[in-house]
Image: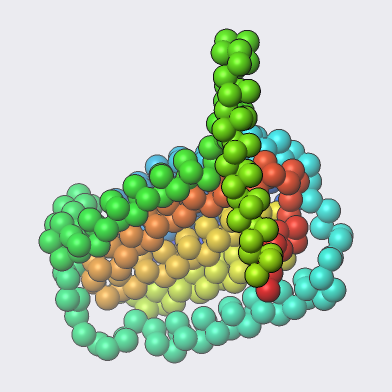
Length: 210
Length: 102
């Protein structure tokens, strides 16, 4: 066995075991930690494929930021309760889900292996990935020339995501006021809120009447 | 590149994708369903990188870069939504959020 095969077998089995753990563990914290194992395995596979920059990003962004965000939310919500996997509210959903997943696996394997690496037989249009530090330079070059529009759009996307996250997760105004420090402010806010609520009630009544 | 090794990467990607899809369909905890979506995105990334190195095209790696960005923003918005839902209905599962059902 070549070194590449050994690395692939080890990283691949870590990936698959982690993926199974993500699906099968009952405690969300264990799920998140299994996900970290899978993400590290994927990072090793990226390195084996000479995608060094992506491997670094994978560890920093995915394992470092996204999973930590997951853990934060798990702790924030106090979801230390485990899911009862024995209850199946939709009858026959589990077996059907497994059948669907196996069908999906068969489908993707058929397509991927039938097509293989000779899609058109054409050589790369955007250039060779390169090796080592060369890979990072090439990726940056392509990103800022050929894909610069997409790059700019991702900046907009990230801004929208941050604004959306703040909008969804903010508390109502009244909850944020410290009553001891600002006595009376809450009552004042409640008055103005009553007025707006009256308005919406009137509107909804109007809708019902029509 | 070595054709055999390449096929193994594709198989690994497909298996990870199927496991993620099964988890998404089976689990009812919103957070775990979300993790399964991340799993599926990573499976696609493995396939992208495998093709990038097999065809000698850096476009595949650029695609992975953009998938990572989209996944990050998706997680941010999705977790904010989950926090908002959980604040309203503690311990909610996917079955409890059927208000938008037709």
